[in-house]
Image 1 (cartoon, protein in one colour):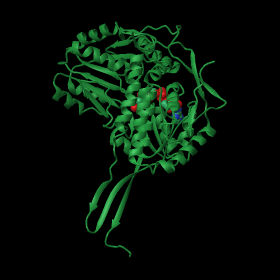
Image 2: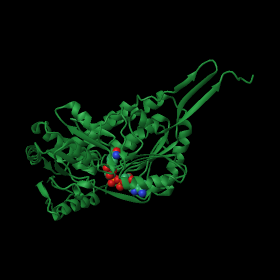
Image 3: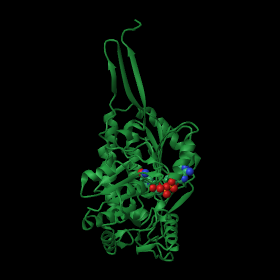
Image 4: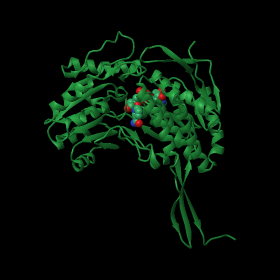
Length: 475
Ligand code: NAD
């Protein structure tokens, strides 16, 4: 019998009569089961979070900060068990799974020191005016399957630090590591402050619609983000949405192909391309296009695609069948249209595991589906450009606006281009870097609001202004 992972409600690990199977994407074997929750379980979790909020909102900053540090330590102390489990359900190679787990621990600790200070607006003999931040209340957190632990921690940490309590719903595809973490922190945080419940996608709208939840913080696709915004409008819940992206990387003619090929490769292929901020469109100046595209393809030929649990694997499988079919469909569309491939293009869906060969396209047109749509798979379209104005226009020609990158030997020029990109983050001569103290915020249809840093923390609070008239004391 497979292991059954329970939910965390009000400090207790609980189960339901219905269970969902969780599959290892490399072997297609069922590796665990999790509760299939519905309205009844959600109501219990919300009631627990609501009751805990009455106490937690009055807790001291020191107590809240300590809770984050304790969770961080629990993750680090159990990192080996957690990263192995993460690989088995998500597919990413052990080294990348370990990075996710240790990164989650680091982010939790680093954010534990963020302070929302009161803002003194005026203080003279007549009046004292001050803005303070108060927690919004009970938070519903909904997360995807590409970075299940990072995303869970990214919702739980700021919720607790701001004085909120939370009900978190992992993706039905990747709930195991999060539920194991739930078990590990059940005695680390006060009962009811963190509740983790699992279910099908259909549990999501129940959370969005729940009248006793005050805020939704969501990471996932733009399509689902729009539904959440709609659902949350009924009672004007506060929302933070981190959504999809179609990030452009721009490589200027002065970049040394030998220096950037490997980094560009990983900016597209880390986590099998299933990263919201992966480089999904790579624009290379025509002067270095041939040399650099060949260098990337040569590097790729030595990267092993396989089971993330096996030593030597660089790129794992696609996390689930639905996404696997979608990536294959985009590749087939490129083949049907006669676009050129530098690598990949052929796959064998009859084999075991959702593996897609590394796929690099040679200068497909801008309106190719594989360029215009978010691939979310091990696919890298390389495109030629000739002028700066042209490439900026092409990069910005997207409904998405999550992140982007500029590669150049001329840092000042690269920054000048970076500032013209319509995205929330732009990397210059680096990639996929997030820091705990800067806001991560999608522009356009890549998001609403921000995560990380003080701006991210503020999203879990309301401003409250206290105005004291010192000259009108009614005594
Ligand atoms: P998804 O939108 O299908 O699902 C995300 C979560 O929402 C899951 O937990 C799912 O069960 C739940 N859900 C599904 N339908 C819902 C509904 N109607 N109401 C409420 N919840 C619902 O996304 P996914 O396929 O799991 O993840 C991939 C997407 O996530 C990509 O588009 C990727 O770019 C995006 N993503 C964004 C970021 C970011 O920070 N901007 C990070 C990671 C992933």
